[in-house]
Length: 179
Ligand code: COA
Image 1 (tube, rainbow, N blue to C red):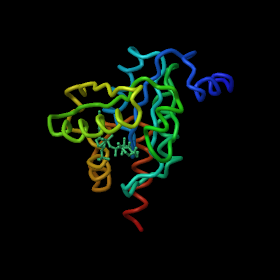
Image 2 (cartoon, protein in one colour):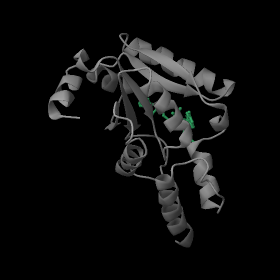
Image 3 (cartoon, helix red, strand yellow):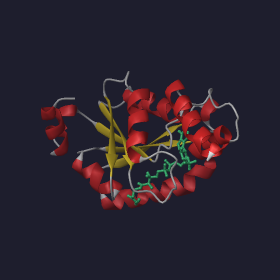
Image 4 (spheres, protein in one colour):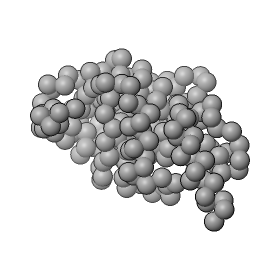
């Protein structure tokens, strides 16, 4: 992405077409997340995977690490960009001129929280709507914390994450175990 493109994006101009923001902690990005991104990249003109910098979660990877892993995993998608955001998601959505906030739904249990988040974001940034994509069945039981827990206990998570993420998890959680 060129600087000119970035400037257009930041002014909310629609030169990039319909922009969708996919927000989350991504600690780390899993195949469940990249499945949502790949499908969204075929629907929207431009998808921004937005990595939350400030989160109440005690993350295993720093914001820069989470951004870096997501960039490597998603490098093949030309209309996908990975950025960090601080503060309110609604402000970031508005700054990007996005029309959609993208969320994956894994199970009915996700719905209540997602409905609340979507409603609040609609109040804060009325020009954008939340769009839900159902998670592909194979990935419906994945969560980043489960992946971290299994990896830290010596289980094999290769099926659920990109090889780059697998290597990062092994290195990070292996070091923690020794410490
Ligand atoms: N495949 C695999 N896993 C998935 C998934 C999918 N399709 N969709 C969600 N998950 C997992 C995530 O990995 C995460 O797992 P974890 O809890 O084990 O880490 C879990 O489901 C919850 O994910 P998500 O709902 O995306 O929560 P999050 O904490 O990652 O992100 C934010 C929440 C960042 C979007 C939200 O807190 C936010 O907008 N924060 C900014 C501050 C703000 O604006 N607050 C007001 C909101 S109205």
